[in-house]
Length: 113
Image (cartoon, rainbow, N blue to C red; front, top):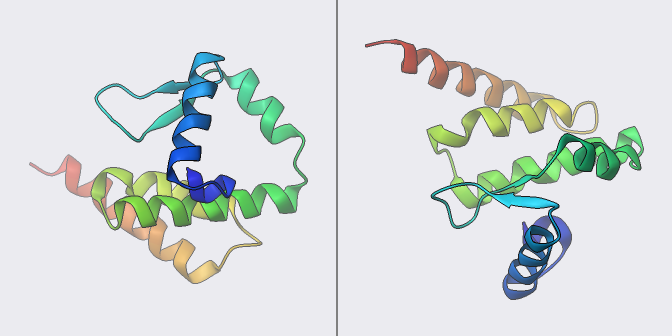
């Protein structure tokens, strides 16, 4: 998250803690580094002020941050693919398509037993 906001580790944790206290973010259960926006209205308010280009750039940065944090972890493949898709047309097409195929493969593998 710090990379998205331009904050170092301690400053990012402090900002996240403050956002949780203020009710803007929630901590995902059983994780130390995963937050979610607390409510759809908060998300709409924050994202609504961004131009389409800025929103796409933000999605591109989120996808990169997820890859930096989790690599090719199957658990985050869908999130990476979603953010890459939302980064188009600003983001790169080839990595976006690879991410979508990977997410589909992970999902398909989860159905096979």
